[in-house]
Length: 347
Length: 285
Image (cartoon, rainbow over all chains, first blue to last red; front, side, top):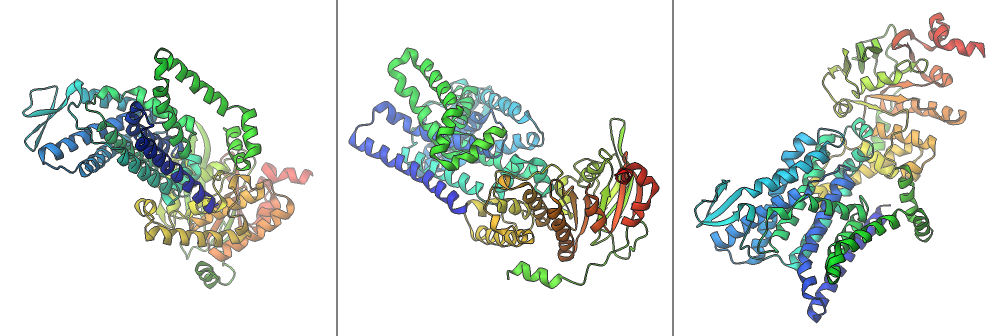
């Protein structure tokens, strides 16, 4: 069992590393199109988002509909940090600035995660979904009237008041403008590996087991002396931190970022990645996030029918993965999948 | 022999002394559990009323009564799944008022469930590791970054889990999925998991349900063995009278949420009130 889990994790790492190498080869041989190259960093960010959300939805069993909110917090705090470091402090090393921005994004989102987690994770049922949904919208509205400017090496923050001293970094509804695009595919890849490392190792540790035990049977877990709130919080905040890091990476890939980029749609998009990849299945999240981010780009040639085809593909995938005939066929080929069927039948 | 096994062998003493069978008991040693005037209402329905029970150290007590008498409700009250509407529960001398289930468990009360509540998708060993959660500790960060604490903790958990599983000769099943075990083995695993939390009082909710007579016999031996090895008190709900009368030193009979009799197996069997309420059925047979 132990070695089987270990092997499965190795395969996941191998897939990510192989995909990275393949992309590098495609880039250096010039085969990769420009539009696809532009998608590489967002793909990394979405993969991290999908893994992070899977930690909340799949591993901890709480439905969060506001993960774009954490992404947004991470993106804007990361942008502010990167601008402050590069313009205000005169730090030239882009990798260091990017790293600092990603860490800032993670910390800021983590704080936001704690703040909403404290009241919400004590409740049962669908409250978390409702409140996280509201949280995503609140964050968007707050950033819409947030003005942050850089004056020398000093930061000014104001609400609903664009007349702050210095150069505006975040300009209310227009969002962050004039961002230096320092996000690199290499850093994105590193972040994906880091996220995988954190989540896979967390699952296979004392804390991860506690999180899954609470998901599987809350009453029994409590009777075993597990502190439900603590472990729900742990999963939720870790997930928020990773989402914030993804947000910082994503934000620093564009020269302008507005809060409207992280709407409810984005939360749902990431949830779709998680659901299609298989709830609780980390490898599936990576694959579905990658494919579903590329798909709209590949369909750009059919611009008018793009969303239509996208929708049809989604429906077909859902039908196919829930088809009992197909499932039993897969089970005949891969015997270890049999356990999953039992779960599905019980659910 | 592993470290834990040695420790257990060393503490294995003379047959556990029984500290006063239920009515008149020897309370020189502080009892493990004292429930005083315990009660709970569910919207006007007195599910349990005036429940008084004292369980001494290393005592095996039985809680019996017809279906719907409130036996499982008593368990839920003792483990704080329900907060009692009246009365107090003292666990090892400490009042559990305001505590939640997890805190009560840390004070030394562990239980099994009538409808098995294992973590079905996890391995047998991982189920026991969950039970060991508060016994072997290391933080989230050492867990993620695989620091020495992680390896030490996991090794200790592994050894202790196998050691605990060996009580029921289940160490060979350690890597099986808990949900795929046969019914009897699942019941035994629940007992092992509860024992892993290092309780001073173990509550067993119908441990013999669904077991054949041979398995029940084995279970009776094992319950006594657990008591003698771990020096814990055990309170069990059971419908199988051969088990209850066979191993329980004190028996408490519940009917309509009230205690109608307390005493030794013999006293209970001859108590006219009990016979009328419950055991009378057996006489007809």
